Every structure is written in structure tokens, then in C-alpha cells.
Length: 300
Image (tube, rainbow, N blue to C red; front, side):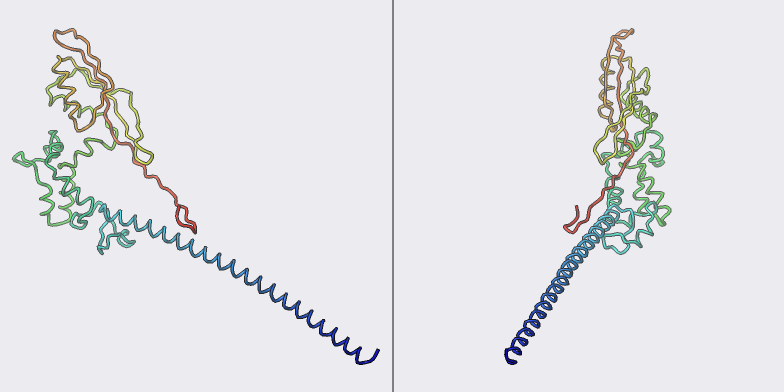
């Protein structure tokens, strides 16, 4: 074999080796680049989801805080000093619900109740129907005392606070605790029924509580409504029974009749009447908390 042929073969082999080496380098470079690119894509997707999750979480927190502060401002629990319709952290830290005067919380629920509902003349008689309450609600001439006017003319916060408490007691707002008291009070329920019967001119033999109290749940989130059972015994004629039932029906406080037994009495033209009735009061109010799940797709 000549030297030229041998040299050519060596040259070709060298070229093939260089080409093979170049191919391997190219494949290695492509593989490494693909690995880096894939890792980068996964990292970018992860960061994008992480950023979106944090954005959704912050949005849900901001919405909850915003709703909470708006509720406080609209109800009139705290003073919205900068008039932005919300209660910020500084305003919340200075909040004193029992010391707020109405001029500091205009157009709020509390302000509207105290200035509008409290002056409803159709309901005002409820506050002055008993002697004990009337004594503190009427002036020296026996006329209703205008505590709201007294509040508006008060010169200092102390006098305003005192007048405001009287507005709660001696105004139409008394309808709320009278219609559905916030706690169990057998004596008050008995006194209310006693007052109704006396106003109707009906005399009764006995009025006693019974043990048949119950509890009704109004909804899954609202408070329960509990009841007080009373037993009323009358010895009256048919007109007396009618007046007693009519008085109970017209009461601002609900008296439901469970049973009514009427028998001829020992006295002439008298009926032995036994009425099993129940009055209601609101149970303890519970506020149920709930959780929201924040995901990259939104809030559930």
C-alpha cells in the first residue's frame, strides 16, 4: 500500500473521530440545555402559581378586612374619623362603643335607630305602660319626657350619654326587649300577663309557671328561641274568657296557647278555665365562623 493511500485513510478516520466527538458534544449540549430549560419552565410555573396564590390570599384578607371595617362603620360601633366609610386600625384601637355620641356617627344604623325608630309615636306607649317605667319617663306634668331633645341640647358628653340611656328606656325602642326579651325571666313574663289581664278587667285565681319549657332553633346560624310555660286559672263568665284571650292576642309579647280547658264551675254562671300558655325569649346568640380555602383558581 502506498503512503498516499495510507495517509488518506488516516485522514478519514481522524475526520470521523472529530465528527463523532462533535455529535456527542452537540447531544450533550442539547440535553443539558433541555434540562435547564425544563427546570426553568417548572420553576417559572411554580413561581407564577405561588405569586397568584399569595395574590388571592391577600385579596381574600383585604376583602374580609374591608367588609369587617365597613360593617363596624355602618353600624356605628366606632367613629369613622376620616370619613372614608371604613374603620382602620388606628380608629379601631381608639374605639369606645359605650362612649360614642350620635353626632359622631351620623347616618349609621345606631344613629337612625336612636333618632327615628325611638321617636315612633305608634310604639311609644309600650315604654310608658307600667307605673315603674312611667315614673321615670314622664315629666312633672305627666307628659312624656323628650329625652332625645334633651340629648340634642346637652352641653357635654356626660349629659349626652345620660340622655341617650333614657332614650333607650323611655322610647319606642322598648318594643324590642318587651316583645322578645334577651334572657329567661319568669317573673317578668308573669308580670306582663298579669298586667294584660288587669288592663282587660279580668281577675284570675292563679298564675304559676310550669316545667314545660322548650327550645326552638330558628336557623343554623341564628340564636335559638326559648320559651317559658305558664298556667293561668280563671273563674269567670264567658265574657271574661273572651277578654282574657283577646288581651293575650293583642299583647306585644307573644303568648301562644298550648291548651285551653273550660268546665262549668261551682258558682253560678262561672266557668273554671285553665289556660296553658308559653312566652318566648331569645337564647344566646352565637356567631359561627367559617373558613375559606384560597387556591390558585380563586377562593372557595
